[in-house]
Length: 422
Ligand code: AMX
Image 1: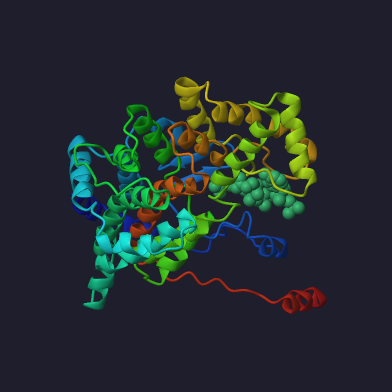
Image 2: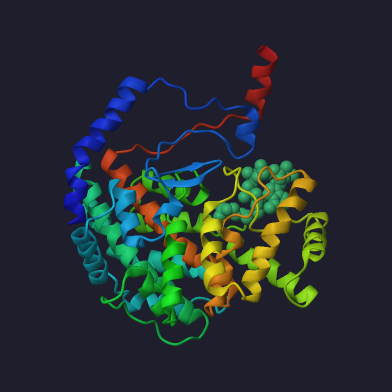
């Protein structure tokens, strides 16, 4: 059914993009300075992505809807919204859930690969390896080698997207159970929704966890096109690498401490404070602890952002849920205390352009509260959540026939020569 819905909007999608290029093709989105080229292209707008926008002050807006207005939905609904621009009807949601349940089985060969990995392999490396081990299932790979017409690329890409979204909770939960000796991987229950299945397959059956997972997934489901994870996935996907390869590349990008691994690092940092002060630190303790981190030349994990300049609504949304349901939790309480004090210290420090907590400052406290206490695992649920946006973007790009990503680079010598000529 999702194929039909997407196909119904396809002509309009393509016509809109063609008109955009025809009428506005010469409009300048950004000029690029040498400083920007040297510093991670910060602020350079050089991609078109319609699934979501990160407004520096308001944060994530998905298809025109501020993300906090979506947290009572299901992740399935949000995937539909990301891909098609509209929330699903009840029938469309039921069909999507049915489709996901039918595609959710992870073959034994994948578990064999994961079991063969080193005992201290990082869970994100296992997730990426698991995707590569699933890659032989790619409908895109098969159909392309059979001679697929360009205008039909999106069809097997959407098949792969649905298979990946279905398989990811099982894969992510299964690798947790293998990596941390929790028993055999569990299988998908078609009676439960997608996020509840993720929790149950982790081994936690708790309605409060199901609700927290739905919110967490929605909050982290997309973050426009330029974040490292989305950009890596888009770049690799642009050469028609199949969706398994492209998403694995995106996840590898998410695995760095300046990006999604901050979820692990921030709780490590929070736990350090709890240990040092014997419980939830008071305000002077947090100030001291934060200054000690900065004076040691380290970054404060879970704070700052490359685009956001105000509060991250993903942080606010998750904290609101936590305050309602587990406000007394020590790790969560410390996260909240820190969020009240650290911004003042970062402002006084004077470097970070955004001194506020980002989404990674809080998510680990949620997993910890529900008994997932293995910190290296914390980036995995982020990756599973972000797959919704990565795959929506990928299918749309396949449908639009987006060409390969291939910007130019310049040499330092070229810059000096240009300067001498002026
Ligand atoms: N602690 C200490 N210093 C920080 C800082 C932090 N949390 N955030 C920024 N700074 C420093 C930068 O390192 C930089 O220092 P420099 O001039 O000596 O190189 C200076 O402040 C200016 O940086 P910026 O323009 O504000 O940030 P950025 O766009 O270069 O980087 C980010 C953004 C997220 C990498 C950075 O804020 C950071 O390292 N934060 C901590 C890690 C983290 O939480 N990452 C997750 C972000 C959300 C996500 O992607 N999942």
